[in-house]
Image 1 (spheres, rainbow, N blue to C red):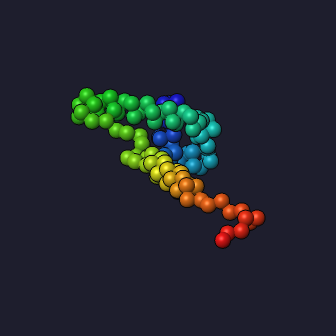
Image 2: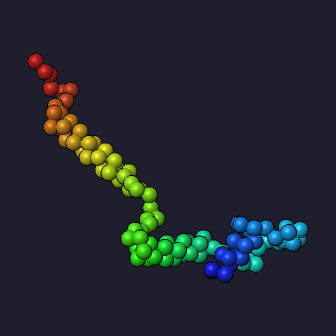
Image 3: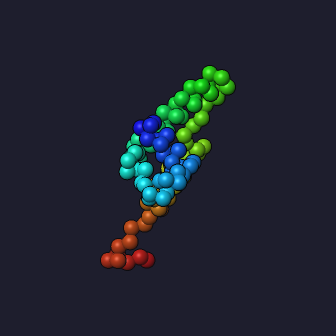
Length: 103
């Protein structure tokens, strides 16, 4: 995986070899990387970075943004509000029976 990534970096991402461009060589076919492999490489890189950052700078890096799950609080609040509204409506509800005449 790492070898393929280095080849991608040296031939596709950061640099382009003239011979590859002229010959229309597709590096990705000769040195494939799947999404799962890239994800694994990112996870490993983050782990290594956090390990050394923790040792030398007493800090670590998160792979998630702050507040990534804030929407769950919003959805929970909405659900609670709907539940309270239904309870209020149910407790104030007068059953309407058209056969009974109101005086």
